[in-house]
Length: 186
Image 1 (cartoon, rainbow, N blue to C red):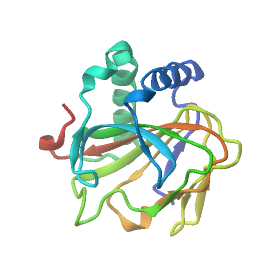
Image 2: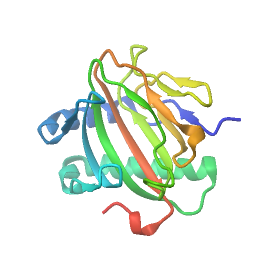
Image 3: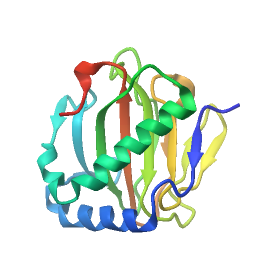
Image 4: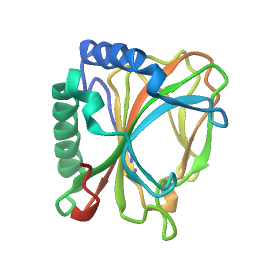
């Protein structure tokens, strides 16, 4: 049985629209990653980027949405995997553009981000069939839909994943959870 959990309609279309509208309102604060074809703003600590990201103050206009989502996601991970206590370590707001793609990668390993235990991805808009999430070692491909939550272990090479080329704007919110309190997002 796969440890990749797919939960359609985890958040409502209205919640997705509110977050997308917010992301578009802060686009000038997002950084464009030309290699992956995405605009991102990151929060929390991520060793890949060797930084702590933005202050959470930028989220103030819709902080309630984010707090509720983080709580729901953490509870769903606990329900599905029954891990030790978890803490949100980092998350991005991401807008992939036409032509964007992400090559297969693991979110954590012994060299980088070894504190990360689970990845959670919420998709905020529907896919036109492009931009699918693929786990090559598991032979699993997921076509994103608005409100869908995908969760999986972050620190296992079996869960290497990538995103196929995107032919439209795709909004998402990847999150990473840890068991180590010192990495709690602040």
